[in-house]
Each structure stands twice: as C-alpha cells, then as structure tokens.
Image 1: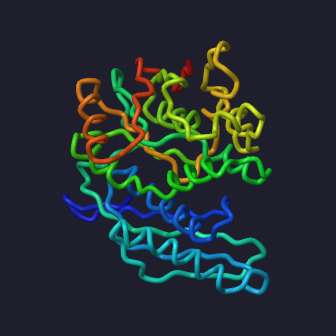
Image 2 (image 1 turned 180 degrees about the horizontal axis):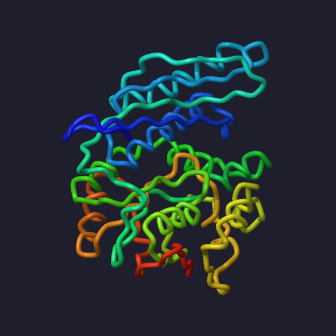
Length: 297
C-alpha cells in the first residue's frame, strides 16, 4: 500500500497458482477472483490488472490457454477492472493469476492488525475448497460438491468488502492458503489479541465434511496445522473432520471481518440483504494477548 495524498492510497498485489479444477475457464475465473481478494480485504477498489501466465503451450495448446484467459477476463469485467496487459512465459506446469492495482482512502483501510477486544468475527464464505479439490483428484467428489466449490471460488468478495467499509470495519483478511485457523492466527498476532472461534458455526461447502471424514485432507492442511499449532488451542472434543476443515487451505475464500459487537448484527443483516451468503458470526476477540492466540471450540 502506497499513500499518494491525504485522500488516496494505492494498493498493489499479485497472486497466481496452478489449476485445482479441470475446467480451464473455471480455473481462470477462480484465479482472477482470488487475485482481486487481497485488494478487497484491505477495503480497496481494484481498478487495473495485469495477467501473469506460465503455460506449456506445446503440450496443452492455445485453446486451453484462451479459455483460462477468457475466464479471468469475465471476472475482471464483473468487478469493473480494466485488463491493461500482462506477461507470459513457457513453463512445464500451467499457472495463472493477476497483478492488481487498486485504490483506497487512507482513513478507510482495513488491515489484519485492526482487531480489538470485544470485536465479533464475521465470515463471508463457506470453507472446504481444499478437501473438495483433493476429492476431485481422487475421483471421489460429487457433481454437487464440485459445483459448490466452483461457485464459491468464482464469487467476488467485492460486495462483502464494500459493506464492511461502509459500516466502519477496520479489521479484515481474506482466507486463502493458510486456512481459516492460520489466517485467524495472523490476525491475532498482528493485533496482539486472543481470539475464540466456534468450529461448528463455520459454514461448510456441500460435500466438504464428507470428504474430510474420508481422510481426503490436502497436504497444505497438515502443514498449516503443524506450523500454526504454537498459537492455537483446539478443544479435544471437536470432531476431527471439523478440526481439519479449520486448517483446510482455501482458494478464493471469503473474508473474515472484525467489527465491534454493537455493529455485528447490522453487518450480518446488511451482507445478507446485499446477496452475500453464507454469512456467519464465528467468534470474538476475548482480550489482549502479547503473542496472539486462537482458541478453537
């Protein structure tokens, strides 16, 4: 983030990754939505984007690449963002994403360090994209769960961000590779506070619980749990599949918004009225903590 004047700051971000679905257009849409989320998580409005492409053109051909780029362009048009160019290199494995430039008012920035004791935590998408993607790779995912995953990944966090900013929220992060638990740890540590979250309150994508109960847990979830365990206490009575989903790495996940308790009900109601769903209050900030701590019940 770069402050230009008293009422204008630039937000610059980049994100790209390998395919997690077979449909190239869905991959392009999900990658673009994911790239834009960093700007939305800071309360910004994305304005321009550059394509970032790595692609084995001799192996997969230009038609697949065209569909990936079309998917990304569809999302950019939906977001009102201008595609102004990009860069491509030949690579053995396809990768796609965007470098995004956005704008934000310096007094309305949301950060992952903005939590305060008493804040409620609001989540704006269901979790489970990682376990469903793992089920897809194993040929064990239902059509319904694949569709649910695709819809979620391709849904912009634009409206959720706009509503949060309009109600004065100052704490926010988007849920991606570190999983919900990992990103809550990042917020707790940056804000120097303790957070309590209820796993049963976290919305879950259709088929995700079943996939988790079958042990279809991506390697990233195990890595997240190992790394972040130093800052997390998990209730031993919590079912294993619920715990696993808290660490499940997400692609183009939702926002976690921290907001004073007095405003939390209005935030949830406004989000739902604006078509943001599912929305759930998943926990609260219980007090200050020098090192940051997350309790999962």
